[in-house]
Length: 147
Length: 102
Image 1 (tube, chains in turn cyan, blue):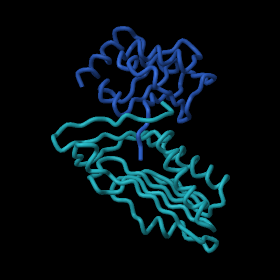
Image 2: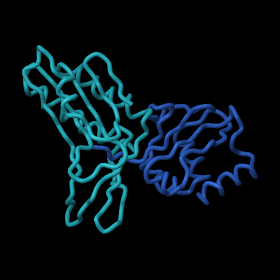
Image 3: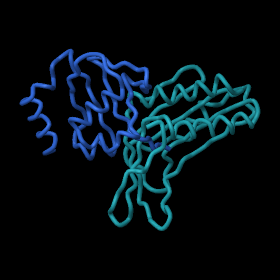
Image 4: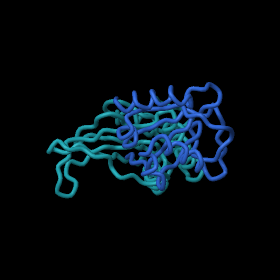
């Protein structure tokens, strides 16, 4: 599901995330910079090879919490527009699992906004990832708060 | 799946589940969903209860929840509960283990 309101578009998606859509959404005549953060499925973790991740989510709650985090950035920082998408289901190694775009009049707020959103997302949004290893084993990744 | 049937059977025997407006719906995700083998269950509560008491009540029926009790947080009707949150019959309660998105 995707929730949109003025200046904010957040949501969970199945399948690839459209980077062009992110750039289009955050375009703003007042913006002097756009920061993009893409979280990518890592194929090597320590000495283990990962073939992909899969994500479970409490969708009904994830969208509002993502919206809340984005609203905090809009209210506290000098930014223009925000776009966030997180994939659910299977994400093969090398593909983007989360994409965040923030436009702002000046670059510090764009960078800061992106960082705030990914940091808060990892602590607050009810999404869980499982790693699938090349030897056929799998495990849920140890999470961070608030749990 | 075997576990699901087992819990359903217990519910029938004890009459503690599915009592309409006296139950809360409990949702499981990720590691707990896999361990427990069910996505949700209806749990009878005697009245208004706190998050900590409800975690104990859930753990009583689903022992796996007890293993995670120290790191579980509940979300009531989609909002994280704190020590002051009151849970009432009819509420939907998600059992949130530490999240790992991103």
